[in-house]
Length: 346
Ligand code: CNA
Image 1: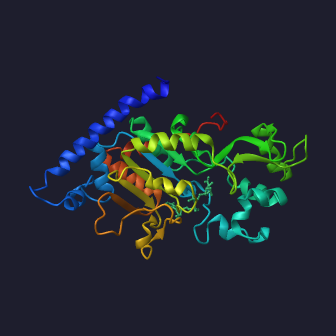
Image 2: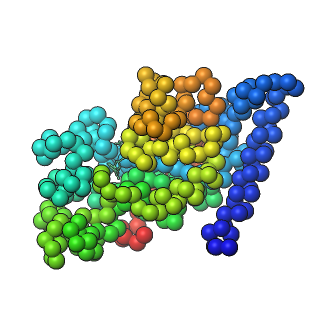
Image 3: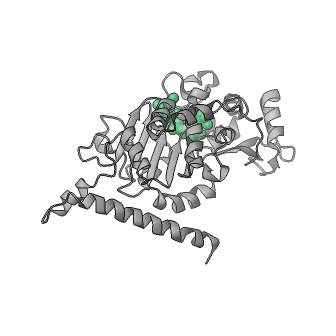
């Protein structure tokens, strides 16, 4: 048996036991002869579809394999603009680059033609300039309490590393700055060299083929790292609570992961606005983009039995959740941690 399979068995067994416990609990309300549909809608993993309900679910011991999906919104309070927030997001502030469309700044074909806008924009995100947000430290606390299965992040700012979230718990779905390669001949370059050139010369060229060098951020038109696929396949079936924070859920394939947890697994969204909602409730929030993947959050569905939405900042949401878990002071203290000198180590 491979090491991976050895690891897998007990976790799956435990997960099944939890499922049986949950089902047994749910069956208590079922009267003899009740129709099956009623059994399903009676099943409610959360005592209330809000942060308090999620905290109770955790405190009752139901969440031992929490997955946290994150996006640019968790780093906004750290001083890094997101993409899509109206007015402040990067996409609303690109006029000076005369781009054909906003996403072009992170498009691999456009980069090959005109790399300058990317190098300019990326200076404002480059690791080493920012202090992580409370939301990053909350993810670290989940790991320290032994509850974090994985943090899947779309972010490229590396604040997960600075907040000391264990790096084997983080999947950088859209890559990062820890490596850099030439887009022509794929020669690898030291990250410090690339960083220095970006800030001093505004453009970085390969000494072998004269193409541009790009940090290993995943651009539109490029594939996601292998570990994103292998870990999402392995992790999501084990997940017993999904927390989604600070993302518009507009970028595939990442966004579709919210549908990859089991049907009875609670999902908490902490965001400034409702996103990833079921297409039938699009008047209430931003729906999941791709109809090929059915599902989405059911906040506005009268039969919603497991989705909770906290409307507000990630930092307020995690503080409220931490308070409800009795970790409020621990989170405030972690947030005050002095940040280590920045080094690419993952
Ligand atoms: P996005 O599309 O810009 O969406 C951000 C979401 O967060 C929006 O729904 C906002 O309403 C919400 N939001 C903004 N501020 C807050 C806040 N303080 N609290 C709670 N919610 C907030 O960004 P996504 O991450 O969804 O898009 C994926 C892109 C963004 C990835 O490819 C990233 O690489 C890329 N990106 C990353 C960074 C970063 O690494 N910090 C910055 C900008 C863009």
